[in-house]
Image (cartoon, rainbow, N blue to C red):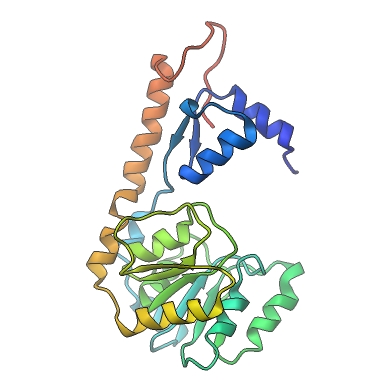
Length: 250
């Protein structure tokens, strides 16, 4: 089932509070659906606690993948651009490990990836699977070279595990003073992707500093902010409403 523009707009207009993942998404909602900015709260995705305490030993034991490697987590597709990154790293001597579902319509794309000798695919992992968190910790660099992202959870989870990231420049994610561990490059600039990965491999940042970049994004903190939205709705402070109107958060 697909939601039409009209249905989405109606749902947003009926809501007393709308939650956006970032400033860019908020602006897109305001301009795309003619919504007042005052009704939108910007709250990030939350990171589950086990990513902050992840250990790479489980991944290394279960997969046998040793040595520095680049990890890419996400569904296999041209939009996520795994092939572009893998081709950019050809000859660099760095394995690329993919985790993510490969839909039937992307099997040819997956095969192109697997035809490259330095690429391996582990299939999809459940978000709660300890092997996923362990993979983030075991990786030397995590990468998200997709054509665009809003507030990518996989980047936050990698940083929570203490692993530096190379990601698309087309994203609303903005972490102050993060260049030592978070490099943003154009999704279609293979040489820049290669350079960013190799730089992080050559000068790996200290894990505690990397984790500190996202320590404020714990689910406990985000959940408290979401709960506060409902408290404001209940108290009638988010925006004036007619007595017969129900309050909604989207």
